[in-house]
Image (cartoon, rainbow, N blue to C red):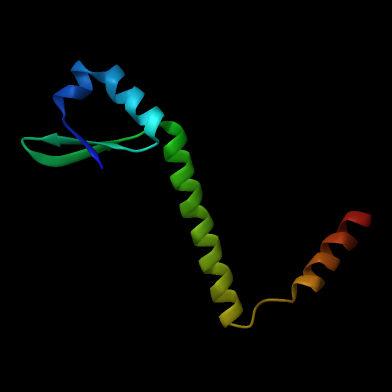
Length: 87
């Protein structure tokens, strides 16, 4: 269940929010005037999410390359890598 707090808690209860973010690896949603305004999360959670996003982008590019016929079989790719390492 998401943790939702007023934006004033960021100033008044920073340590509580930080502890929650680190313990649960989830963002805390901050409201301003009763409406969603910001999401706060730990650096580790942020890096995990951005890493996932980058991976999904690479996978999408790979799938597109396959659809366009711009790929080679895995055994050929590994052979090219091995040949490059042995030079």
